[in-house]
Amino acid sequence: MQYQDPSFAAALVAWQKEHGRHDLPWQNTRDAYRVWLSEIMLQQTQVSAVLGYYARFLQRFPTLASLAAAPVEDVMAQWAGLGYYTRARNLHKCAQRVVAEYGGEFPSDPALLAELPGIGRSTAAAIAAFSAGRRAAIMDGNVKRVFARVFGIDTYPGERKTEQAMWARAEALAPAEGIEAYTQGLMDMGATLCTRSSPSCERCPMQARCVAFATGRTAELPVRKPKKATPEKSAHMLLLVDRGQVLLEQRPANGIWGGLLSLPELAGHAMHAEAPGDAAVAAAVQPFGTMESLERLLPVVHIFTHYKLHIHPLMVTLASRAAMAGEERYVWLGAAAIPAAALPAPVKKLLLDLLGERGQARMF
Image 1 (spheres, one colour):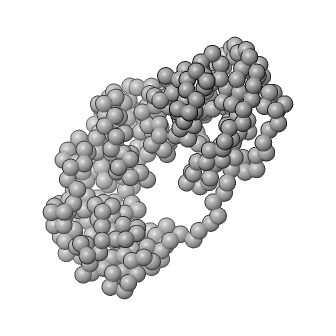
Image 2: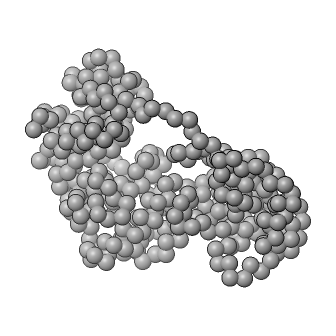
Image 3: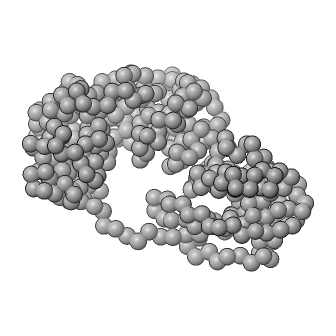
């Protein structure tokens, strides 16, 4: 095949063994559960952000069986703040599938791994390589950046034809021996040397063969996706307080913040949400109780992958609380329970900031 080049893998493996990362908590193990957990957490998330979550998650769920047996609400609570919450739901489903279909042992075949919830082709390859030493090719953002620069690929990596060619190259370059060091080397190069900005070309083992370095195009490659204006949406959230507690609503399993607790919203995330008048707020509050006072708090901005959300908190103190019989998706929580609650990051920050500014007595 035209992409075969054993010297590429040899140079990368030699560099990784001497200069790569070796002390991350999920390294130096063949435990597929720990490898899988780290790979899912590291999807679209920096290592520095994952470290604390990884340790706490393992403390709460030390085995695959304990994760599979846990309520999904407990899993979401441990994941809260890490983002991309579909990963947490798929993590739970995957654990249950592995227990039910494979007796609690992850398969070593990348093709079988890729059929499990939340595990795509690249993640399956990484799990198989690190836990079983299987020859399999990864293709994440780091690898695309390394390939684009080293081999001078000047088309957008997200384009189907370009991505297919990159996969073919990745499959051809993967060595038969030393796949663990090779795979880790690709990750390490992208994370520590071949970074998006200010790459450390002077320390790179690929400098002599790198097309981008030779042609002065490290800033241009990989080719960026054509930019589009970021849509902006608004949400008016009810911050209902009564008798030292705040009302929270469990969101649907699918969609933004799926399965997490959050503040009730007047009309969801809307492109052009007009500020509701006092009468409209009182009407929205009515199912929960009688409004005593209303305070419109300063907006909070949260950036999602595909849009920017402006959260407008409407803090309402109730004169009396309605029973809300049969409404299981609602729960009243006191201030002490907020830090550990499974809340979206901006909602938790809003509540904790208010507690810090006003104190529990004035807040709840």
